[in-house]
Length: 340
Image 1 (spheres, one colour):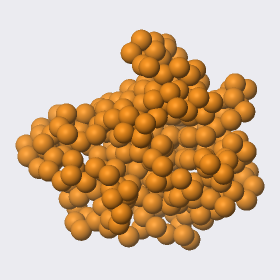
Image 2 (cartoon, one colour; image 1 turned 135 degrees about the vertical axis):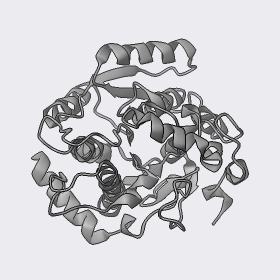
Image 3 (cartoon, one colour; image 1 turned 180 degrees about the vertical axis):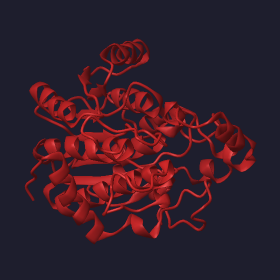
Image 4 (spheres, helix red, strand yellow; image 1 turned 90 degrees about the horizontal axis):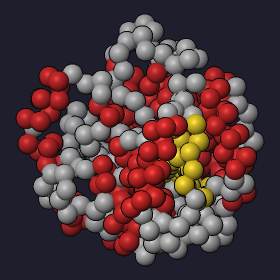
């Protein structure tokens, strides 16, 4: 593999914990010489009011692009906007789209609200997510929350914005979709007979299938829409202590913190957003996609499926039949039609 596909190999070779020499999202922007170079481009990021989403928005805004962030809590979103505007060199617009990912109706309204403000979309980062939600936690539409939020809400938003992504694509910059996943996708593929896991709920199985679905979404988009100028990759951002961990017990967190290897691999949120930004802006990804990324490089098959410090992908991460079936099921569940 060319170094172009592994530009930070040395920095990731010997991690020393959060804040070490591994790149931040803003460093990726600077290294690609993109500060205020993207005037006129438009990016949309989900879940940008905390954690990696804030840093993804901050970095993309520094390019000079117009950036839209989704927020369930508009006031919280405004606080993020104000903080970024005070500290950033970016010169584009920074706008909030109200969206509650627990409601497909809210997602559909958010898509309309975005399209009312912009007729262009060059980069869509499906960043928002929940993890290890308790049994019985459902979305407003009755879906198991992890499947509903991590996959189905993002599918709905992406499907509704695909025509704009297609129209916005140019020969010099094809539109990009970045779908955040996790090494946790290895816990489970899709439970076709019971996607809501009503028979035997396990929070990690639920998380696993939802994150496998995030990979399949990216794979499908790249395979089917790549010829129309829309490419997609899935991104495992690595481990960061963010609000994503709010459902974990103190005992689980304490056990993780005893694992020296795991803790050395952890990242700050600024570093955790780096691979998403590399996927969003890296010149090497122009006109390419269909890959699983981690550590600012192309991921490899997992050597140890049970190891939390192995970031590789499972055999089921690339399953064309499963991807097709999930797309059809998602269209049905979300009440969305797509043109291919």
